[in-house]
Picture (cartoon, rainbow over the protein chains, first blue to last red):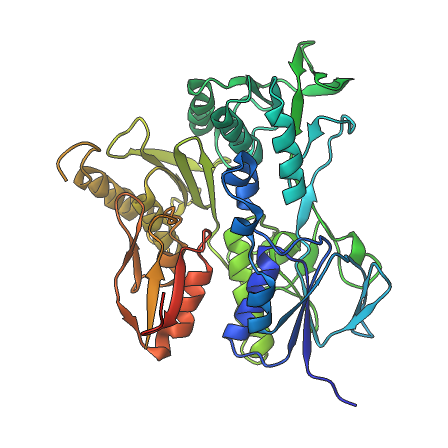
Length: 413
Length: 69
């Protein structure tokens, strides 16, 4: 007895859902089964540190795929049971309840989870990666009292901004590095983003590590390396994430901080990976890359879906990196490679206090990437320039001209 | 023919649509999407739908011409 060709997608976040949708858009006629460990309908994660945390949008607002939409698109949802194993030779996935799902094509999109607190887990200490995490944090914030956030990356900085807007109490942002966002920004630029927090009343303790979290109930204490104890009713630990790849150990796939894939996002014949869990060979950078970015997951979903439907005509996955972060009323957007030891130039926008772009050049002088703040047009110019491999000087000239052509807010338009 | 509809209130200026299909979408100085084409020929529909799926706030939909709101 023959069955229809079947693609099993393991995961239920943006990469998984977009793969299913892109398969249909590409004309895939087989079965599509989407497997998720959480019982909730697939949902989008960027709002978890912003509007969903604040409570201004609901679960329905962040749902990526509801039962009706899934049924219309012919996407079977198998939610509430995580995948626990892969039989590569037998082409099947094992679920937590022991069920086996056969596949012709497998898409691994299990994402990443928050790196757990190295200072122990106790009530009032949160990580934020799922909707349930965000609801639990929201409930604790609603009780009021001081909030201490450990880790000034995107998640930590966004939660600081959201909690400040919620007005739940004093907010302190702690990071062992002297500036926030140190993974993506060089210190001279990152310092400006540190001031963004202090200008809004957030206390920052940068350049000092955390040695422990003590206390109980709403009487928590975050102990710093210099001996300072920060009282906290609620603590958020935002120190990165780890890929959800354990279920694939022993399967025969190469697992090294993610599922190792070739330039076509393929981990083995008929096995693909998408999103945060994928570590693929980026042809432009000529090395394995794992990207925890929303846009990367969507672009990789499109590329993998194309590969499944047109196996003889695969495209490589070589995206220009793009990530955004909304903090307070600032819209921060990064494209390409930024920070590190790249040279940089700041291009002031129409209102230099809150509108600017930082352009980065690699050692050869080529345009490598950009950070733009409250300047969407500069972001578009930079992303297009990166795709077209335009020169650093041409980007700089274009943005300088754009800055002069934009009237100031409140001026005549 | 198909048409693109944009939710201007939802748009946050992430610009993924412009990068995916800059003949169809642009962003103005306030960071709000501008539709450059009223109608999308069927031959272009898949590409524009892909651009719509790349919107982080799902502000874009492609519907059949004449379809009710």
